[in-house]
Amino acid sequence: MDVTSFFRLSYGIYAVCTADKGKTNGYIANTVFQVSADPPLLAVSCSKDNLSTQMIRNSGKFSVSVLTEQSSPELIGMFGFKSGKQEEKFKSFPFFTGKLGIPILTKDAAAWFECEVVNQLELETHILIIGKVHDCEILDESATPMTYAWYREFRRGLSPKNAPTYVDPSLKKDEPAAKISTKRYQCIACNFIYDPAIGDPDGGIPPGTAFEDIPDNWMCPVCGASKDMFEEIV
Amino acid sequence: MDVTSFFRLSYGIYAVCTADKGKTNGYIANTVFQVSADPPLLAVSCSKDNLSTQMIRNSGKFSVSVLTEQSSPELIGMFGFKSGKQEEKFKSFPFFTGKLGIPILTKDAAAWFECEVVNQLELETHILIIGKVHDCEILDESATPMTYAWYREFRRGLSPKNAPTYVDPSLKKDEPAAKISTKRYQCIACNFIYDPAIGDPDGGIPPGTAFEDIPDNWMCPVCGASKDMFEEIV
Image 1 (tube, each protein chain N blue to C red):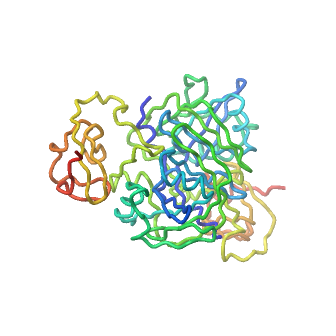
Image 2 (image 1 turned 90 degrees about the vertical axis):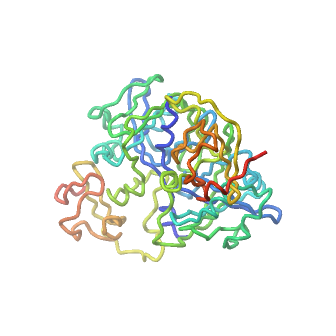
Image 3 (image 1 turned 120 degrees about the vertical axis):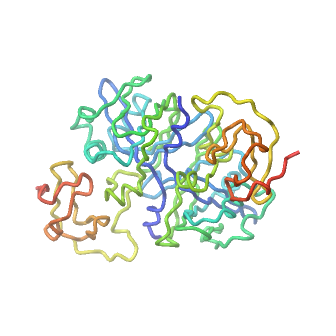
């Protein structure tokens, strides 16, 4: 089994948002897709660990904003790599409240959907949530939706470990288990964590590379911060 | 609700294949995606009307081949627009039989997956089938997987009416109901049906255009055959 095969599946990049008990939240997802035509249903695969997942299950509602190739690293850093337990994610990004009473992110979005949960399927590490689309609109006719392949190629994005599409680099074919140093470093701009066991393969840094051995011109794969913006996690 | 919003969701293009009771079959899908990381699970949204869907439910097995931008119109015409009730779809295309005993299409494929059905969810017009990946391999490292957006832009592909992502053109925003002529024509090369009620919006032919009024340089949106390759359906 060559797990890099999974990188040949195509996805978009979306902000999936909700509100519950007066709190708003959201996260970045790639596994959003239409699963039925009439009525139109969207499916989203959510990690059981995510705060947003619990909030969507409680409120029974979620929105999907289709992010564009112009989406800012700050937005992806905030919604994709920080937790709503610590952050009010919407504080710096424009949104509006839809008919279902949940926030719909409009920043960097080509289109949006507002959905009511009609079904759920528990799947190992994830829950597949099915939503009936109540409303949807185009925000930017000319914007190109960001694809996961584009994000990997041009932004060198990595899936967080709780994404359904996370692939353990140690399972990659023909890559021997590397001797791994254990010091992890965190980007102070976006909180991305550099883990030597994972490296930054998309940025040319193979698994097993100590942070100290990364070239000085390397940049944070999430937000583009320079190497000196990283601090050791102690 | 502006249903063209659904065109902003990103998908790949896949051949989903199976075998049951000695017969092989397959169809073209865009809604294939990874829904859980460990163990890796793939989900496929299948029309209840498809013969392949019934065969996958009977056999409990399916394969997914990731089609590339070089995929031939003949392959998409055969697997996407013809029925296994009339055709032996594999007769002209290379494949091999995987460990689970089902055909895996290798023609025009960047990678493949072999899956065992572990769950199913009935959703209105479609069934979401969840498969545990038993094996997967890369076939062509350098090939670019075809995306649905690319297919729509460069091949002017249309979703068949039983696709989960089919959008009824008559629902498109700001398009008044057109006076519709009823004569339908079929491509003798790939069986694509030109329906004046639908037109060929991606090819510049708005809904409500009679076949006779289409410019002579128009081509079949599926296989590229010329206009004179179409015959009236009587």
